[in-house]
Figure 1: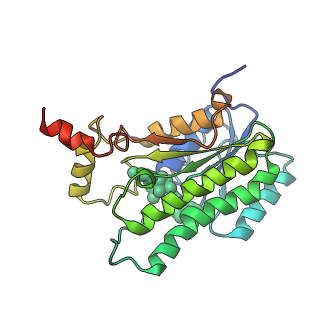
Figure 2: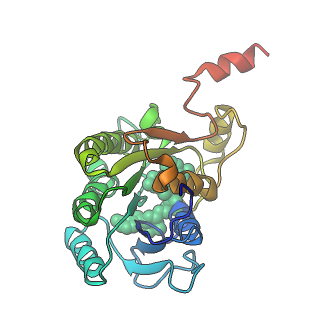
Figure 3: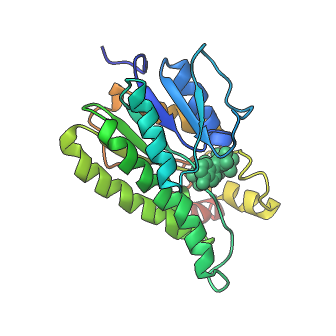
Length: 255
Ligand SMILES: NC(=O)c1ccc[n+]([C@@H]2O[C@H](COP(=O)([O-])OP(=O)(O)OC[C@H]3O[C@@H](n4cnc5c(N)ncnc54)[C@H](O)[C@@H]3O)[C@@H](O)[C@H]2O)c1
């Protein structure tokens, strides 16, 4: 039967302590998955509300730590579980501009946004079988010339990682897709300047920001058998922000 239900499936979500990751963990658990929510804190963060008796579970994981990934994979194997889904959601931003960004800025962001996702795929793909699904969380920055250069280049790099992974894991029946959120209301965007918000809204055909739950819904679709022939796809979840390529300002000016 084809449905959005994920009963019997085990899904790992990184950066699940707040924002989009927490919403994804909650929705996937509500869809019946055994969710292993992970984040930096030792204890289960408040945002990860258990919707079933045993899901989400919580484990501490710094995605930049290869040995942490190895421990997680070992623990999952020791429970007798396979992995059916991985959501590489953990990410950090860094807002320095082109002429100010340092190599250290780039390295810091790449370590989490790119290397963290690579380590996750390397650690968990061996536990995945036919029908498994990996979702990488990119950004509208990965589809555009968004100004914070370290963040934008890291998310473009993540697209490259996703495409290679889709190609390499496809023969094993493992799908890999990337969702690209636009302006989503989370703790990450709570600190942006009002000008950033206004300028983004002006470029967003739906005329509003998005919610973490709206990203989680697309992630659920990509983890479910309903998307069984979708791999190597870049899917914006951005209210249309990336789709018009700058044409919205012209259209609005001529109304
Ligand atoms: N909010 C937006 O508008 C937006 C837009 C585009 C893309 N994104 C992307 O969506 C994802 C989630 O963003 P969010 O807005 O929920 O962010 P957030 O800052 O609210 O939450 C990110 C979570 O990742 C965790 N994290 C950070 N570094 C980590 C590490 N090394 N190991 C494990 N966990 C770590 C944090 O502890 C936090 O819980 C990120 O990849 C972000 O780049 C967000």
